[in-house]
Length: 333
Image 1: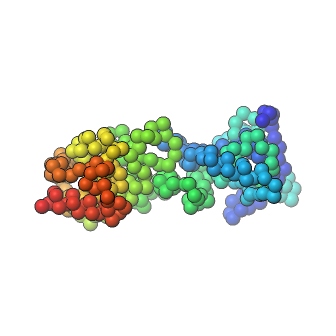
Image 2: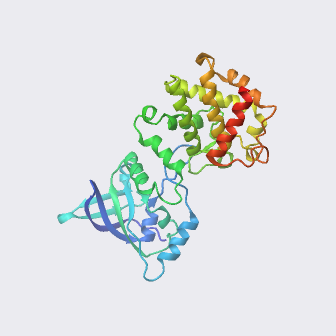
Image 3: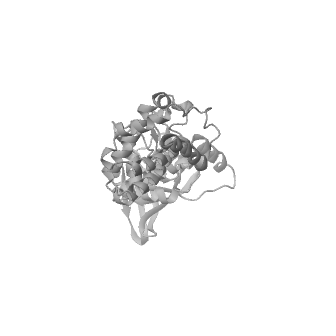
């Protein structure tokens, strides 16, 4: 598309719910050029949206360029920190003129990423709505509400959104906070090994999903609270030390994770369930990596974590509980 010096779009300003929006019409290629999707980069923690799906975008392009087709209005946000690239002139009777300036995209794609993804050269007109000057927190909250049930949006990504949207994460969702810390603490055995649902250069090294890890932690926290372990820093340290011990006791399975069940759902849920029993029988002051290693070493003579090993037929939460029963019997017999 030929680069434009600026583009002005006539529209109207009104309210959608309780928030002010600009409504207008523009060619798809113009909206493509002046907008962006804020994709989550798992390595830096910047962004919040799912990765682009080129197949999805291409399918929409094939559909919308056929006669007799249409779509609901695209949804954007005019980012306040990018106001040097846009201006909005209010006129009489709710009319307004939106000017998009060259030099940088300023329309954040709240709900239209895949509809615009393959429209760089398409001049078909689209109706669109843009929120005006929402901060990133409010924009992300809207994205989460609109897209949380959308096909293709991973549950791990919506969980990750919650870590940014909940004000007091330690109080309201400690399982999310602990799971996030395990993935982002450089000393953690889980460091950068958990998938949030975004893009990552080390994606092939990630062993489990954020949804799976936080779900397993949630259950363990309930048992810790029953044992009067209520401080989140202590809870984190116990879980940290426990997985550090697992990594030390099963080093080959940890390293060869693609061919073992240790860090997959079966291992994750069964081992976290086992942690609950170990917490119950312990002197709380002795719960550290060395203590866990002593207990977990009882598993090494008989437990085989290989994908085609003794737990090969175990599946789902029920299968994980059956594996836990085997681990429990081995340690406490």
